[in-house]
Length: 584
Image (cartoon, rainbow, N blue to C red; front, side, top):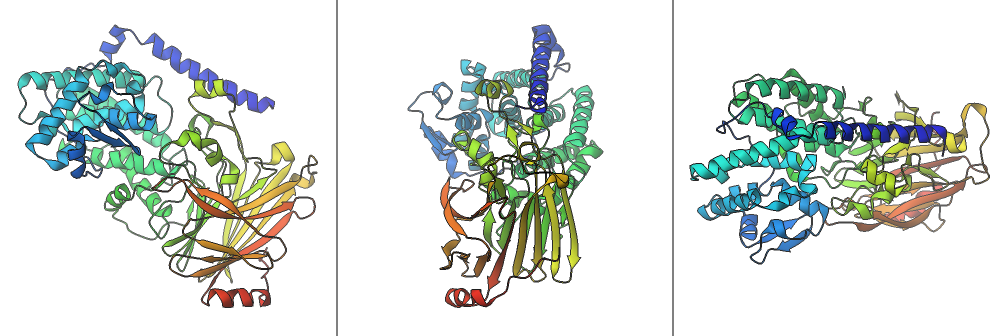
């Protein structure tokens, strides 16, 4: 382990110790009481919940069947809060109380009574002290849900239940404020501050807290939302998670006749174009840095608030992504370094990986991250071989914390070393759009720079690429192991068959369009892969792989070509075509 590697781990550990020390120092009951300076006797307003509600699920909940995160739990007349959760994701969904919106959608006397009964069960249940129930992001989700669904729970209730509900909210808010000292950086911290802002606006006698919560949220938005609208974690899913709460928060300010803070308005205005940037033609997000299956219902809701509706931007330099659009073809590539270690628990070693789509069909993808059961796949999904890029000696371009004890202490496996210098330059040429990129993720261990050049034809019918491994600054290649692999993971809907000369692969898309992958100077293999970000869980798929030796063949040239002919004619004419030279 290098000195720089150890120094980064030490810094993370010291930060974690400092947060826990602050939490212990402020953990007395007196300190907690000061965190709730404004007493309240009523709810002023209930914020709007933009999440999709399904009234048919109300009947399942009434029957004691709770379906979350792909798991089903049946109560059998017991309290759902007393049951052993089948998974952490299931428990987080239960204790976040987002399922109350399904009961509200049904809007019957039975569902209202059921909602009150379940909330009353929670208020008197000792399981409120379970560790996951006190996790910052779960508490934030619960507070927002209890505020948003207050009309459902409190409709036709008596004064005694109303006061208990307010006291329960006060306890949750104290827990939420206390968790600020130990909440992980990134989306979770923003969610806590958003929840506190909701509380100050929705409860009476909170004028002082409105100013404080607004100021803290504004500062955090300015820090976490980059100038181009991306999130500092570089995870596309963060945009959806945050906007689905920030848009109703903007409405809540207006409902209270309070001007929303400029930082909130500016953050929303910057984030909305990023939704279009990451979308493929089928509406799904590109799979980078922890992105899982695209929640299409939430995305459709968010896009309804997009007033610009213009073409996606070509470059997001602050977040570190580039997009090439030509005809019906779209390419999105990761051209940024990993986020800081304290924000990298979900970041991937996918520098210079790209995704390619044609119209409504995705062709080349990254493996992505499962929406549930991530622990089984997390190590692989974050590795470079799970991405459509070059992998040297089966080694990821980023180094992660590996010791189990350290992972538990840091609540994850952050990136402690990776590409520090990632360059990208694009220009219009006669043949189309040329993008030149490079990263130094393999410099420290192997003394190599990975350079990737892409050229998209003007009509989108062809993508030419060149990948090169070269010693940095005229240096020498280190070590005796010089093998590398160039991988292109395919979407499960693509039917792939290797051509007879083993120099290409024919790809048939769901709409019967035919593309051909070619690498005339190298052997091309088809190997098994896995698509992790499917709505129905991991699915088997294929990947195009070129294995090479960096000393013997440091450069690989390849292309994806769309054909209007039949698959047979495409195969027959392939040998007659000449591989064009890239304008380097």
